[in-house]
Length: 83
Image (cartoon, rainbow, N blue to C red; front, side, top):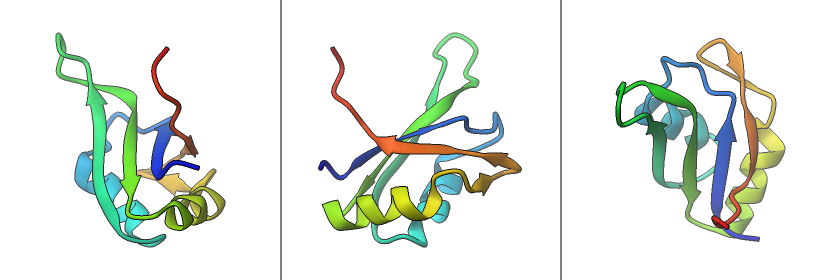
C-alpha cells in the first residue's frame, strides 16, 4: 500500500490546513493539498494527503473514511496513479 491518499467529497470551503489538521489525528501528515480549479480558483471537491508511513495511511483510511470534515462526510481511499 502507498502512503498517499485520495480524499473525495470535500466541502467547497475545505483548505489545505483543514485537511492536514483532520488527518493529523491518524498520524504524521507529510503533505495535504486540496485540488483547485485553475480557471475559477475554487476547490474541485477533492484532494490528496500524504502520510509518513504506509501503516499511518491505512489507519487514516480506517479511522477517517466517512467522517465529517467542515460538515460533510469525506471519502478516503488509497490514491491510484494517473492512467
